[in-house]
Structures are given as structure tokens and as C-alpha cells.
Image (cartoon, rainbow over all chains, first blue to last red; front, top):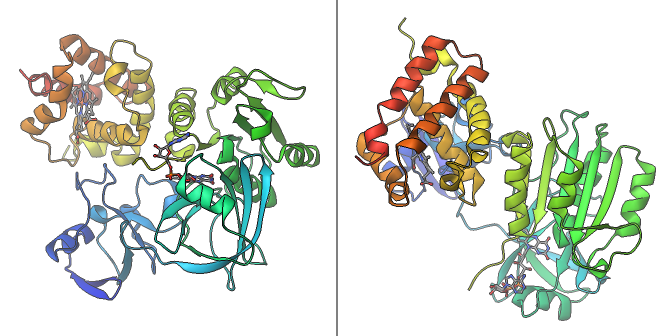
Length: 323
Length: 122
Ligand SMILES: Cc1cc2nc3c(=O)[nH]c(=O)nc-3n(C[C@H](O)[C@H](O)[C@H](O)COP(=O)(O)OP(=O)(O)OC[C@H]3O[C@@H](n4cnc5c(N)ncnc54)[C@H](O)[C@@H]3O)c2cc1C
Ligand code: HEM
């Protein structure tokens, strides 16, 4: 018999009873479907102990690493503290220390915290305005001594949150920031593996973090970054990426433009087409896809069909709330 | 032998390996890929895992009625015997590629075949 703790509440898990069955018996509202470990509907997270291995079977490495597990497959061996997917996030206040333009429609926003902020480069957080309006944004840097998080935020014309960040938020303002989430990040394993990073627009933000992380952790395999947008004015960090490519022989950078004006040094076309004209076989590659949902969903399937293993494809679709 | 087919084929790791191969084949097969064009690949893959776990006689609680319900929407948009045969073809080819012994492939195929009426809503 073990104890399950969620927030302040404690529940008993009987011997031979799964975490899912215990929580359902206790009337805790948790999504589930197959109860066989296949559908992953009941995935939750342990905040104190490593879950039994059998409850993590079939999950992505980056989820296993954060102690996610399947409640229906988990027969606890010790007391567990749990975090459910819809459990309200813990927010803390940060202070804006930089708000400047990266290009004509994207700002660099840097938020500083008093204490260390733990995250993996490539994860995202929710930012919240004082009236409760909340949006997700990807972290673009790796953990810093200065406890700062960096964001790249594109102005969506008429967009409530992005226009507010662009037009009204200034240095010195405070803003609420959630705990980090998402499983699109670099794990220091298989250093010789090829890494493909593909992003559109501010999809560069998580990729820049992942790239910095991989290089800092001594990744030796080839790393290819493709960054796409319509016009050259919508790309950013172009010189910095070229410089990085000069410093790291295993890093390669390709800026892509889908519009009609293509200056020297840029490749014409949509990122998907450009990537797959250069890569016919992605067997053994680790693939990161971030940005426009259509690009991400299409590329996910294409990368898989070109041989990348399902477990090696990490994606963040920047879904925009529909209302 | 007392072990289940699921265990003899290799359990969950075998299911994962089979899904990789099988789903690539299905998406590349113009006869049936329209049924799998769901935008959310992760959800599709979870369903493929359910498919293999079941074909291997592994832990699952699907009834004939569940199989009817799961495929009823597809039958409405034209799922027929030919499509079913195509899936059987890919199942066999996938397991052959994974070097599963012939007698085990035959067992898995028989389990899948037994769902034909329900899957096709007959
Ligand atoms: C995991 C994740 C990570 C993200 N990371 C980032 C990031 O790093 N940087 C970033 O800039 N954004 C990121 N986003 C997107 C971000 O969360 C917001 O959706 C975005 O900033 C728009 O919010 P808004 O309040 O300004 O727009 P809203 O007020 O929500 O306006 C959206 C409205 O615009 C409509 N709309 C949808 N698409 C478009 C379009 N292309 N053009 C015009 N109108 C449209 C929608 O129908 C909707 O009604 C991320 C999203 C997710 C889910
Ligand atoms: C050969 C026997 C078959 C078996 C044993 C089988 C088994 C299954 C199972 C277990 C599921 C998951 C149900 C759920 O949990 O929601 C499923 C879903 C599905 N099957 Fe089959 N299936 C078979 C044949 C086919 C065929 C012939 C097709 C189409 C060509 C097909 C297409 C699908 C699709 C598209 C889904 C997902 C439906 C959804 O998105 O809800 N299946 N199948």
C-alpha cells in the first residue's frame, strides 16, 4: 500500500492497484482511454521519485527524463507526489530586462528572476498578463548564471498578447511566468548522431536553445539548421548563425525564403522542400521541428517516411488559439 | 508452449519495431493511405500500437463491438475487402522484415483475419 499526493490531498493506492484505478476510485478527474499503456491518455508526472520502468515503457526519452509515466501501467513501489496535466500551473514573477527588435516584426524579450529557473533549452513556458490572458512562448536560451529567460516574439496583427508585449511592456515591468513544459529538447546521448533542426519564423527560438545546448554538451555529429520565412526581413540572427557555423565545423546553417526576392546566400523555397531536396535518408537522425503547425505536421510525417524513427522526432507546433 | 504469442514475438519492443515499419508501408500505399491521413501522427501511432498488440494476442480488451465502432466511420467512407487485404499484406511483410518465424506470423495473421467481419461492419 502506498500514498499518492496531489497538491494537499492524499490518496491510498492499494497493493496490486494501478495509479489510474486508485485515482478513479477516489473520484479524481483524470483522462484515460485504453488502460493498456498504448493510448498515452493518462500520462502524468511524478515530482518526487522515478516511476517504475514498466510505467514509462514506450514514452519518449525526454518525457522519461522528466518522470512522466502512464498512470494505468504504474503499480507504485513507494509513495509518490503527482502532477496532473490540467493542474493549475505554479507561476512566479519575473522582471523584463530587455525588450528590443530582432527584425521588423519580432522582439527579443528577456525576463530575469531572483532565483534559478530550471528548464531544458527548447522547452516553453506560459506568460500571463495581470488580467489572466495567457500564451505559450518557447525559451530561446540555455540556463544562465543570471537566471534569465530569452524569448523571440512575433507580432500577430490584431493578436492580443503579442501586440501587448510589443507595444506596452517595457523594461522594469514584471510578468508572471509558469513552470517550463514540453518535451522538445536535447538529451546528451548518442553524440555522433546527426541532428536536423527545422523552424519557421519564431520557431527559431527553441531551436536556438537546442543548438546552443547541443554544441555546449559536445555533440560531434552533423547539426543542420534550416530557418524559413517569406521575406528576408522576417528572418533574424542570420549573421550570428553564419558565425556559429564558421566556429563549429559540424554545424551548418541554411536560411530559406519562400517569397520571390532571394538575395545571395539564401535558398529559395519552402523549408520542407529544401530540406528534402538535400536529405533523402533520415535514418538514424534526430529531428526537431518548430513553428507553423502546418509545416510541423507535414514535416513530421515526411521525416518519418524518410526513415527517422518516431522516438527521434521532436516537434512543437506553435498553435494559435482559435476563438 | 505456454507463453502467449505476444510474449513469444517479443512483447512491447516488438510492437514498437513493427509499428515503425508498418506505418511507413501504410502511408506509402496509395490504396489505403487516405484512411490514415489524420493530421495528428502521434494519435495514429498510438492506434497502430493497439492494432499490433491485438494482432499479437497481447493484453487488450477490445471486443468485436469495439472493432465495429472503431472502424464504422471508415466503412462509411468506403472501407472494403480490398483495403482489408492490403492491411493484411503489410502486416505479413512487416513481420517478415522483422525476422519473425513463419508460424508466429501465421498466428498473428489469423488473429487479425478473425476481425474481418467486425472491421468491415458486416
Ligand atoms: C508550444 C508553443 C510555443 C510557442 N512559442 C512561440 C514563440 O516562441 N514565439 C512566438 O511568437 N509565438 C509562439 N507561440 C504562439 C503564441 O503562443 C501565441 O499563439 C501567439 O503569440 C499569438 O497570440 P496573440 O494573443 O498575440 O494572438 P491572439 O489574440 O490569440 O490572436 C489569434 C487570432 O488570430 C488568428 N490567426 C491565427 N493565425 C493567424 C495568422 N497567421 N495571421 C493572422 N491571424 C491569425 C486566430 O484565428 C486567432 O483568432 C507558441 C505557441 C505554442 C503552442
Ligand atoms: C486487420 C484487422 C484490423 C485490426 C485488428 C484493427 C485494429 C484496430 C484497433 C485496435 C484500432 C484502435 C481502436 C481505438 O482504440 O480507437 C484501430 C483503429 C483504426 N484502424 Fe484498424 N484494424 C484492422 C483493420 C483496419 C483496416 C483494413 C483499416 C483501413 C485500411 C484500418 C484503419 C484504422 C484506422 C484509420 C484507425 C483509427 C481510427 C481513428 O482514428 O479513430 N484498420 N484498428
